[in-house]
Image 1 (cartoon, rainbow, N blue to C red):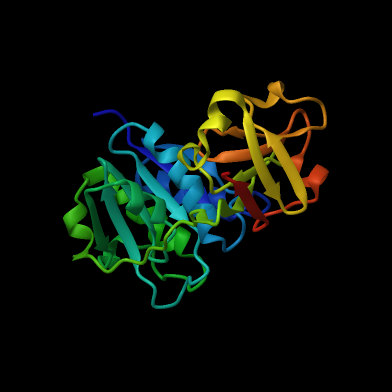
Image 2: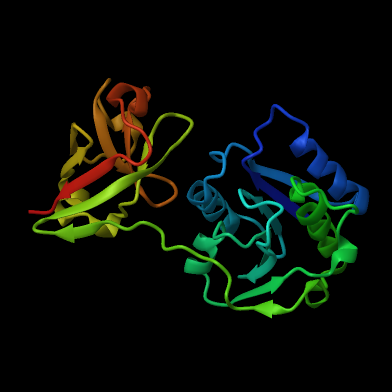
Length: 264
């Protein structure tokens, strides 16, 4: 069997020792593991941002990849640690909804409340369950693949509905869900939410905050310099971008900004 792959998705950032410590814990238990960083720049405490990050990446990994997802504002409280199996991949995360994209997309989900504390590092810190719970559980799983030994199945895991555009009176109202590292504005519109004219001839009428966007293009370079354009991004959402520019700064628009699409 090839070496296990363990991915890390966190809001830890890279300025402290936290990410390196997670990797040390994993490698001490399973020196043969391959560790892949998906991102450590999830917006702090932001469950939606974390859900979108892992949701955009997990399906591109081989079967039996273990994904450690730690966005955990409730660390040290009664919230449960979970081991989730879905589409022949594994997710180790707090039970706070950060796996909501997985729950929405995958039909056969099995969630277990991790109660086998002999897999934890002891003593367990109240503030660093990434180190003491999630990383060691993932590492031990990668050695034995004994999911049933981690705890009992549960069905009442926490999940939230991803924000979807709401159509009323000839318009659809959505939001900017996140701003990526390039300043592109990721909306919650998908191609199926758009009028046919948007995909056939590029005609679209978006109002993003106080800014109008009237052109749908295939890719960034199809936009004129400084022009805000809409396109379908790699994660399947409609994005607003500026060719070789930062749309968020150029338009003074951030996460949570209303996005209105005229469907008439």
